[in-house]
Amino acid sequence: MKRNDTLWKGILENVYEDFLRFFFEHADELFDIEKGFQFLDKELEQLFPTEDIEAPKFVDKLVKVFTKSGKEDWILVHIEVQGYDDKEFARRMFTYFYRILDKYGKPVTAIAIFTDANHKFRPHEYAYEYLGTKCIFQFNNFKIADQSEIGLLTNENPFSIIVLTIMLALKKKNLNDEELYNLKFSLAKNLLARNIAKRKINDLLIFLQRYVSFADPYYNVKFDKKIEELTENQKTMGIRELVLDLAKKEGIKEGITKGVEKGIEQSKTEFVKNLLQTAKFSVSEIANLADVTERFVIDVQKAV
Image 1 (cartoon, helix red, strand yellow):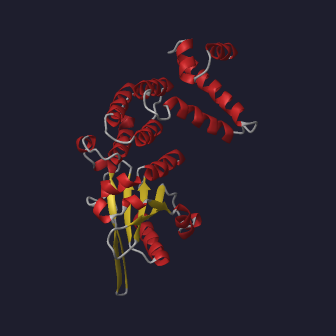
Image 2 (image 1 turned 90 degrees about the horizontal axis):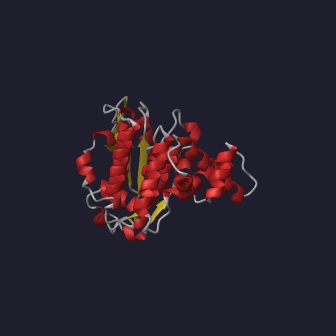
Image 3 (image 1 turned 180 degrees about the vertical axis):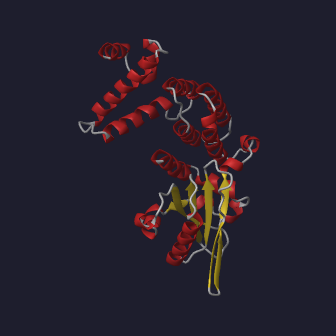
């Protein structure tokens, strides 16, 4: 849950203009995208403290977006990514709405993205009625499990890759690692064939890599290596660097406090150990993947 939360929050910020164009047909006429966006995550947390929430949230974002209307300089877009069935979801969306509206006094639009596999769970409104007082709050909703894969594969908007990644994750439980690898690699090739900025390609590759993983570590390494071969001429962070960087951060979280260099060295050692355990790669291949010398690999091998 925490991993997916971090990935979603990061990718939404990295491709936000594409998110707007994906959900609003006339986004470029409605929004002044060139002015950029302001992400109000801290302000949203203040409006909706953790203690107010009975069930754990998945991902929520509040974004200030400039418009071209001439009447309002900017509006607010509230995004909620929901990964489980929650009977109180619609009410929570309503609570977000009235607190945001009360604080800022600006137009608000709300979008709920459902990433679970339950086709029946798709709330779109909250209704309240008591002694003649009635309120109906409706919000935009998008169920990933109900989308057309063919349509998304031909949709040039980069956000379609995110949707396809979630759809692949939903299929995972019915696939073995080889089948999952083929589908994941096919999606990666689809992404690399698109005419979009290299920075976005890199961001989306990382999202695909981290969101959909394999049961057998061998396939993670196989996928990483194949992607590196395809992107070796692009000026983007390699998957190997991503893995090492993540390993370093996880190592530091677990208590490595003796300096960044030591953290990196230990991360490489663990990475080499994992590769050796697969028994699928030669010493030279492991050295290349981990960006270390063959002597380093041999020393690790002896120590195992």
